[in-house]
Image (cartoon, rainbow, N blue to C red; front, side, top):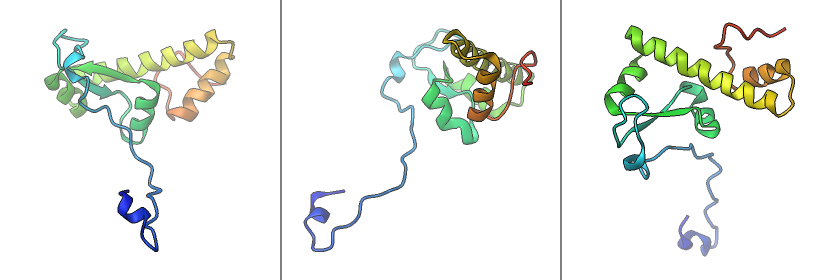
Amino acid sequence: MTDYYKTCAFPKPGSTKKKKKQNGWKEKQNRVCVYTGERGAERHEVFGGPNRQTSIDYGFQIDINHDIHEELQANVTEWAQEQNAYWKSHFEKQFITKLTDSGIAFDQALKMWMNLIGRNYVDDYQPE
């Protein structure tokens, strides 16, 4: 909001809309693709859709070059489907391991994951 609206007789109220987080382009030139090692990689949120903001908050992201990013986003090739499944299970295991290492019971950690993302991606992890 500009200073003009603050000095009006009836000031314009500030926005209450929550701003969405973005990865931006500030550090793009320093990012390295996990597959090819090329610089200038784009950041890919592993959990998209309604969980995109959660992916940004918890760091469920990988840096990949543009062509691979488009392929993973489209998720139509067999390779892309395998890779998306791998990264989802990888981040779930990482999240649960971090919680269990801090002293939280496995069942509770899995429940926290389910509350956060809403789906279990590791076949070995079954809630009781």
